[in-house]
Amino acid sequence: MSEAVKIWKILDILKVTEELFAKNNISKPRLNAELLLCGALKTKRINLYLDFEKPLNETELAVYRSMVKRRINREPLQYILGEAEFYGLKFFINRSVLIPRQETELLVDKTLEIISTQRLENPKILDIGTGSGCISIAAASRVLCSIRAIDISREAVKTAQANSDLNNTSSRIEFIQKDFINDNESFNGYNLVISNPPYIAEFEINTLEPEVKDYEPKSALSDNSDGLSFYRKIFETAIQTIEPLTVLLETGDGKKEKVEELVQQYGIKNYTFHKDLLNIERVLEINII
Ligand code: GLN
Image (cartoon, rainbow, N blue to C red; front, side, top):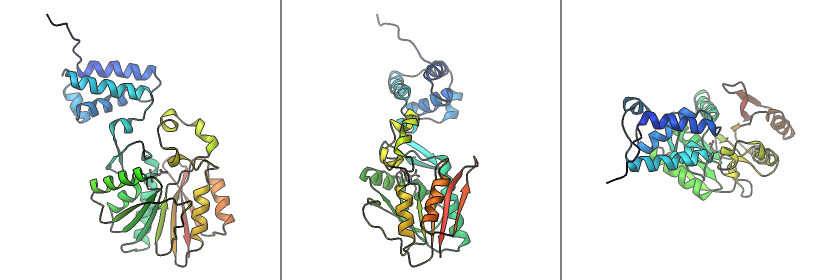
């Protein structure tokens, strides 16, 4: 006689997982449970609601359980699912790249706005620290442009290229492995330079959530110094350009004063900080004329 195996229906397993996540201080426990189950069942969220009574088979249960275990260890949802959404597009995500953040969408908005207001036709753009490629790909999905996107990590460049293929932007973006801090990269010939640099100071890393500090690539988060190295190198390079140039850089919460001080030290006069939806100065725009 075969042993009775517990049958898990969608509704029941979601409830149990939600409780487990809540006990383990995972924020938005229900949403996490649902999104992981969608990943395990390879289905859309709406179908969970339509199939509440449906039992999971053994394979589905095993896949889901291993995902839940990873989440309890505070691994971010996007690494477990292998994907994330940014600017309405899908991106492949793995531990070699930073998970795209919603606030970074402002950098894309500003890029598109500048291309439109300056009436740039097929502008040349440099993206420094492209990671998953999210900023470049989002921009290139909307407008004709020629982007050079660099990143120090070979694995990140591979991921970005796969994302560009996925979103049909490959003819508009070239991805290159390059160390921006130590190898020289001139800004001459570009209309725009964009970047979401690693701006977390080394001493701040310990204050971050486990999802971030234990899983996201260190080199994408921090410069292992005061969090300002990329701004310095970018300002130093920008003031040497011989043609007009716009630079758009993401800045972190509470970093405005330090970054502004640096802008002034480099003698840059024409700059603005743009606020995000939470009223945080999120994007620094510099115009070199
Ligand atoms: N450009 C990518 C993003 O904005 C990666 C940035 C980074 O790794 N610092 O998400």
